[in-house]
Amino acid sequence: MPHHQQKGISHLDEVYATLSVENKRLFRRIFQYSVGEGTLVPPLEMLPWIETQFGSVEAVTHQRITKVYNRITGEGALFNSLRAKRPISAKEHLGSLAHLIDESIRIKEPLDDPLTRTPEDTFGRIRGEYSISCANIAKYDIHHGMLILNEHNPLHFSWEQFHDILQVASQWLEAAHRTDPQAKYPFFMWNCLWRAGASMIHSHTQVLLGRDAHYAKVEALRRHAWTYRRLYRSDYFQDLYRVHEALGLGFEKQGVHIMVYLTPTKEREILLLGDRFDRSYWEMVHMMLLCFRDVIKSISFNLGIALPPLAPVREDWSRFPVVARLVDRGELTSRSSDIGTMELYATTVVAADPFDEAQLIMKYMLKR
Image (tube, rainbow, N blue to C red; front, side, top):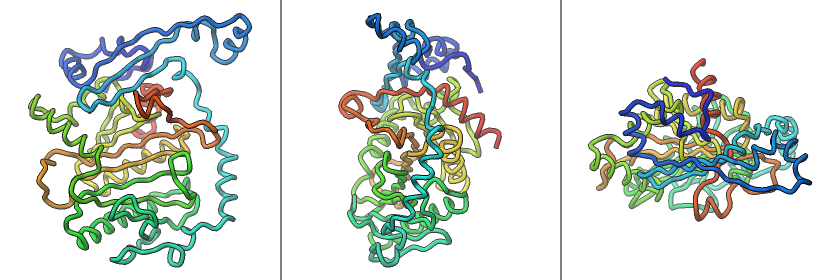
């Protein structure tokens, strides 16, 4: 597995030059990129502040911008080398934020008492050792459940608790499918804290089972992979992993392919591809969550896991893996949103350098 400790996303052209002929061919098949320079002229009065904030005036007046586009899926990202060099600052807020979350325990939420303050599905509640299901009071879809952990603080999650909540999720999907055999398309999600869209602090995840077709972005990914296979007689997900591994952005553990994604939805997006939604896969997702919390210092995040249909459908889902996507949502104390007009209507703008993140994640994951 190659390592590019000395090169980051702002030098993607130099990293690309080190790839083998075959890996360059695969890279060009899936991605296109450019590296350019953005320039500006600051007033003299700003120079002391720039030097203090960014280390040098040159770093600001000549900024390397890397643009990456996924030709297959249409995803893209703009990386600014200046922004990527900024230190991760969440660590200094961990203490105060932990206090804030602990203080919130005094404020009673419906999830603190699920049996009397949350509705249940028509097929009843699914109960685990550490978690219990309820029906979402304001549904995304016809079949939309919430899985409530018996732990208020969402940053306090053990392997036993995470394993239990995924077992409950699997049982909920089976129960919903039995109730409605036409519902076949499963999706699991976790919005951790308010930056990630959670309306309540108490630990909870969500699970959905759709009818007619999978959720739009999952179905789009399936179509892109199907088209890729027809065009190139090759598996998109395997080739995507091979490119990331060659760049030093991907590795395998317990049969799960893990990538620091080159065209992320937002900061520090990780992809985990597995053959089955089983204990081994759950362990890797849990380990990555621990890495996010303890190493990356990500306190608020979104986790989505797309699964193939539970029963036969008309579309071709062969060779489609279990796909987990995990993304950092930034500082809980920030008053600005991490998503603006660029992300909504143009392309993602990213501050974190995936090569830096990959080194941290690999060091953590591969030593465990």
